[in-house]
Image (cartoon, rainbow, N blue to C red):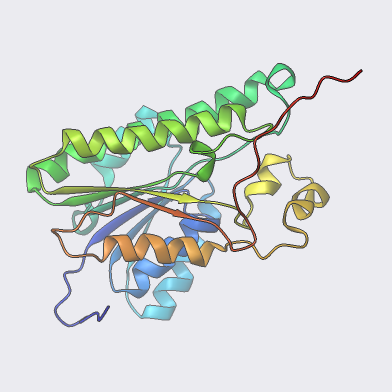
Length: 264
């Protein structure tokens, strides 16, 4: 697809969870395409480092840093009133903030981990959407891009609450499409499979050996691969809505159904 940057509209893009992984690379790609980018995450220092890098690379003030906990409605409300005018009308919201914690079976899982995944992956996503969506509808222009997971489509041992939160993301995205018919707002769900970022390091509470074992002997997706999918969906003509992109590394496929065989 040919991009004519001289005639392309400069958009304001907000990316949550932009301090690492998918979010960081997505922010970098949008900035590289000439758009204004609001980078939001809890780790302010990483965001400021990213801003310095991108401003230096592209020679312009293209990034606005927004320290933010997406699970806090108060912080989101404060953000909405504090954005500078140049960044105040958000054209694309990338709901990327999310995490997985633990891999224990449901009866052994840590309830605090479940609470945190629900708060971030579900509550954070719907709060951000609800606060930004009215402006998009009023302007009759916008795109919500949610980062889901194949875990929302296929069950696996230990995926319990995490998979359920991503199933929410999938259905919430579909219901947004139904609600927004006639508004010209586009909605997309990106569903990655095995991807090597800080994801597993967070899941295993910083245990690098466990995290590395997840990817050993594979060629997983990268943050750049996911950012490419996000950019592609966002760059389609206005009359084209990409509903879902499910992507896996070639080294991954669906597992066989498990069977518990009675012994003796």
